[in-house]
Amino acid sequence: MSRREAAMNNFRSGYNCSQSIVKAFADLLPADEQMLLKMASSFGGGMGRLREVCGSVSGMFMIAGLLYGYDGPETGQVKADHYARIQELAHRFEEKHGSIVCRELLNLGIRHDSPVPEARTKEYYKKRPCAEIIGDAAEILEQYIKEQLA
Image (cartoon, rainbow, N blue to C red; front, side):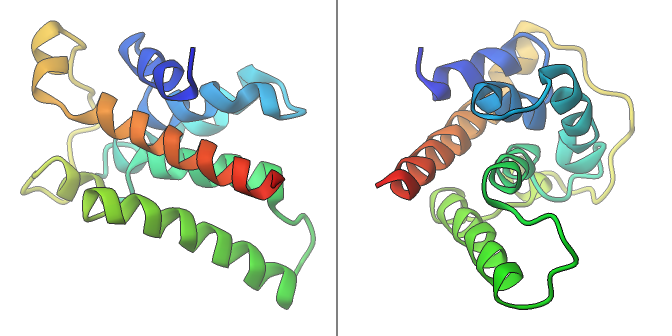
């Protein structure tokens, strides 16, 4: 199964958008999957349904940080290089979807949403582009990782 399919299946199984990405890449990380899922749990719905940065984008950033990030009080080139990496991932996502902001991706006129998630019904999945967006984020991240190995 591709990482795209895995991420989409994770979402369809009930994981939030951020968790769906993190879970699809968890095998690459020297970290406990349960801890990773807890870490990502706050970022669904554009950060706790605030409809800010898309959770799948946040998931990409988390994986990139765990794979390539720094762990000290960096202020120089190491930090700049990592931020350039994150901006590159954001740019690739934005090229495909026009935005990295949840409410814009979902055409919502609200800034902050109710903290209560919608029930995951067949109708929910039909009206939401989230699974495809999550799949695209997984493809972008997978391609980026392959490029780093080349």
